[in-house]
Image 1 (tube, rainbow, N blue to C red):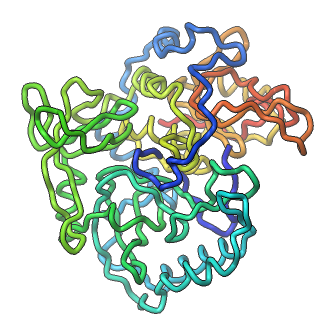
Image 2 (image 1 turned 180 degrees about the horizontal axis):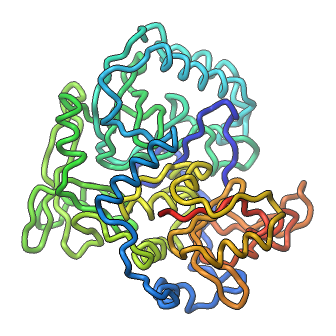
Image 3 (image 1 turned 90 degrees about the vertical axis):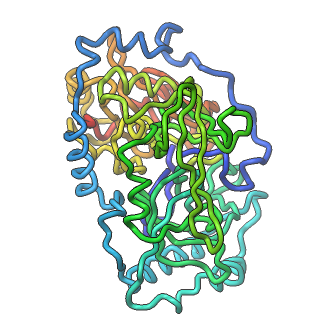
Length: 459
């Protein structure tokens, strides 16, 4: 599912929002009506309760709050792309940041890419529209960091431009400049900005790149940001998305933050939660106001207990939700799906499918199309719900075994159905589905099970 960005880029993938780029409004093929019944799936399997009922102790707490805190620190230490922005210090190396921005520019400018009309992006576009605003000469040896939060979900880009760039004709859903989305209230450190002040180059907890300045509000310092963004009193969005309103009567909707968003709690009423909402005020400085969320919404004070049952419930809340590369088109790609599910449980998972399986206990590494007996043995001892299965360019959550079939829930764009790799025939799925691991088995690629290369328990 994941298509490669350039090998030299730090590949930091991706989430969801109703506020992405203008291209999200373009006409796209309709989403196949779901939930879909694929492979050997039966209707009763399209329900979290079906899989939870098969578990011997589904409500056992796997990690306490303290253990989860330690676990997240271990993930940060293991995965370079995961960064605790509150432990970055106050300064950064200007040389390092300058070199990174230059590398990203050179890599993208050197690729053969198309625009959304399938026309070649000329080198002049980079030289005339991107390079001049990078303002690299303004980056000194040392950078004094600024501290900020996202005022809404916002795209993080490889370059400071909203122009879509794709690899091949018709690849309109796979923008090669799109890294991911950061969610409302995501804390970020600002390294640099473009000459027109429209873009910031930022470090977020799981991605580094360019984000529109209008979606970022600057705090007085790290401590002021931490007081709100890491408040012990917060609501975790546990539904696919929930509306936040500007009035306690819940009539004027502000936005719909998505699963895994953490919103600082101001006070609890009898029928509504009052939360803090950031906006960008004069000079880009933060302005805080109150927002309101119905107590009937799918939110929770603090994270849910980390149990198999809760993870499976969270995953099935997204069944049928749209696929979206890097969070485009109000969707989630494969690792965006797993990221949001575990983030809603308080696990600060990496965003890239290559990195996610390093968050936990490794049950096995394999070569594609090899080690079938070893993979089957590992899955039969794995913990359903919290086990990830990775293959090249795809990742899934393991649900369990039935009648010698292994089942997973995952977000996927298409199923390969032909034997000719040149024709590469596909059937569009474009959503979160529950399938057995035989999906794609009638194609030149082979089934999902055949291509598994890593199995990990997130524990």
